[in-house]
Length: 261
Image (cartoon, rainbow, N blue to C red):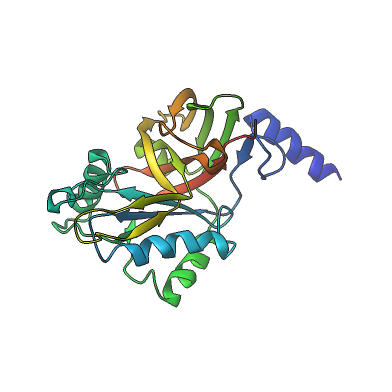
């Protein structure tokens, strides 16, 4: 009893709730490491729909959000072949290219899965869940808290707190924030996927960061993150993760669905 009380007091001092769980409007990261899964994809790529379906299936397997945070980042370099991906952004292409440069590679491709900052080509095999289990078993090197204020349909009013627990990681650590939407559909009328109706989940659209944590390894930030013009808030939410910019290692990740009205 005394130990539980002491832990609650310590967490309160640090500005985090005593229980690492999600409520309707706030969430706290866990003691273990939650993996970040980035899928680089495009509606102009005919080999991407299976990867999009795989990303969607992660929620059905009970892996989201406790074990992993999935994001689909649509790139724009396939737009030239006849179909402009409505979810593609040049900053997602830039992030993919920067990742390749960090790993001293000139290769970018779709679909590409980056797991915890590392290119992971075995995403469609049992190797993915084995690697995920290893990531989840590691003590988290950072702590994140998210809160969303209810009531706005066109944007999410987000408060984010981050703290790097490993002093060796603080100098290069940064916080990233993204909004996402699921249950999206597109009727593709040109390009390699012409005539197909494509379904998407966890699609990133608003992306902000890197936000430096400073020498103390702590950051508290409030900002308004826009939703898609025709967004359904019930299918939207926010993702936060802390990443080492020098190594690409993701220290912790957290996602929070938008609050009910």
